[in-house]
Image (cartoon, rainbow, N blue to C red; front, side):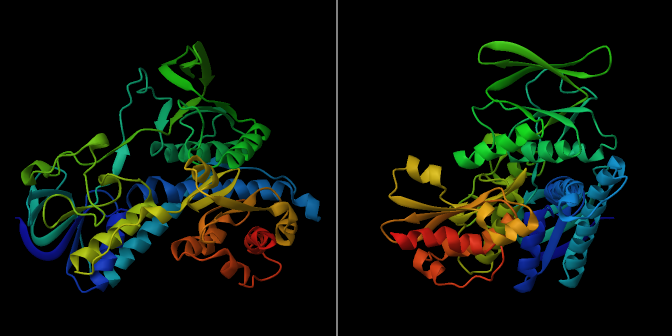
Length: 464
């Protein structure tokens, strides 16, 4: 028997963007229904950012303990239970997802398990796993938040058992001796460094001319230097042509680099590139929406599609695909639905990753500014000269601030080093609110802390 419901807003997909939109809508007084065919939290919480950062934390902790003898603390018989390390990534994911379910209860948001299909502009039907219709939702607005999934790449042999994608990676329980990583973007390099910390031999194949776009060259050079120290082999301009297994069950990756054919043999191949929006079979044809590149839905800055009352956010929409962006887009969509006009501002989007060190950035970075011919001055301060960083024995990296010479305002910043993810918050506020360098200079920072590196970076401008 199919049930019938009414809602102000129906959200198809309960990932990072979907659940944030639901909570925002409920706070603003809307009656909300979330339709989710898998688990709330989506890729980010279940198979992406959260478990990845859990793995990074375990790797960082292991490395920190290994060098504790420098501060007079000795740990005998230090060992790694890799199975337990990987199990914890799933445990943490489950705990954070449970918190999202709690939020749904607290805000009286109805969550329906099943596949959401748009029947018309104001009707969503929900099917169970067998394709049987179990619920019909009459709704005033629809937000499509169905996320993305790994896409099939046109490379022979990727169906091998020795090949895992970025979502399947967290099911690994035995530490590989040699992991080949296909893709040198933020995700690929994050996995590469975390595994290298545990002694896995890593080879990275990047088809582009450089890894980790769009970070600045000085940051990239430090990443490569640290990667070399960890034994990470990086192959840029390396186009993978074929994957096969040898007689011993190892994976063999054939690739072309600068006109030369080469091979790498490893125990596992991690494919960390290629995603497409999950927009097939959700009823877009019923309302006249056509997708574009990577099956994404075109939207405007209010996250509206071309169909009145229908919105799309996160990886389902054309734009930048990160959990951070999706969550903000969810808020933007809801505010417009609730008649509080709001646009998505992508000029101040923060980026964050871990590749040997925490790396965060916001606004216009130095290399981008110079390529655009902007009149800028850069203030840069190394953590090696920061007292707290010396206390932590984490001296590598720096804070870099980009000033627009015409206005004196901070238009971009990047942090690479200890506590970068915490430090970038202050700089995000500075860029977003068009703070001048002088205003930041006049802000007292606690001593001794890593935040002083921000003040020292901006103090460089005072000498001009």
